Length: 339
Image 1 (cartoon, one colour):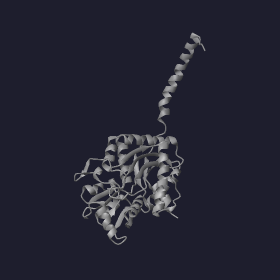
Image 2 (cartoon, helix red, strand yellow):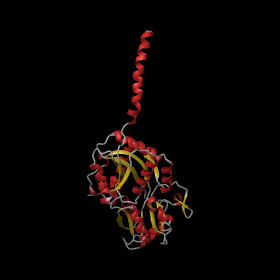
Image 3 (cartoon, rainbow, N blue to C red):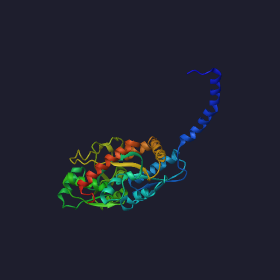
Image 4 (cartoon, rainbow, N blue to C red):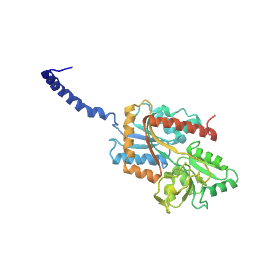
């Protein structure tokens, strides 16, 4: 096809205003949805636990780096082992100003108590990390290894030793039941509102051990009150920086190394309520991507021994599908699934 020179010039000149108009419109269109008022970050757990600490760190990073114009307000809704916060988020249909911190309770609660909820009821935003679990004892006890401690538990009457954890029929109890089976022991499991409370109870010797995340016991470990015995993971943690007394997270053996093949990691992710849009989820997913790229976040995951793992879209929902199936299998084997 050939154009006459004059005709081509007229078309080109006529296209200039249109191109300018499109160019001017592009930034506004590309900006997409963003919040215009404060956002509630719903934490379905008590204050002081790992989820609460993570939410407040993200709140700080967002403010420090001006990643969002309005403020983020952390709201703890830990009642009924986290069901309060989960069901509040589910009930807030179409509200993009409620962003829920999610952990493995999104699987465990529906399986354990037939909660009328499934993670598919919500709008998945992004996963940012996986968290470890460790076996901890009071440092005043003589136990230096997992074997020494579990041998003592095995020699005692069944149920004499108390294991503390967050909530009932949730992650901490799943780990405890799996350890019971692997070590041939029987703990009396004592549920608390948060990992922070479980740490306090272990320091006070009201329980004999807990299976807290690193962030929930690190202060007490540094203070000399608690001692980690093993990590419930396939591999040792990668962090080599000394935490206290010349020991790093990497120096802590896996429970598998000690002869107890129990492995469990906890999801750390975010969801919006149902009937919110992809555009709204994309805003928070992009904001969280910027969060995990900051020096503050990288320092936080190193200090708290988190496994940084950012996923969104199909990679995230595929993980959720597989992780849900794993939890169902583990809980049924442990007798924690509702009949």
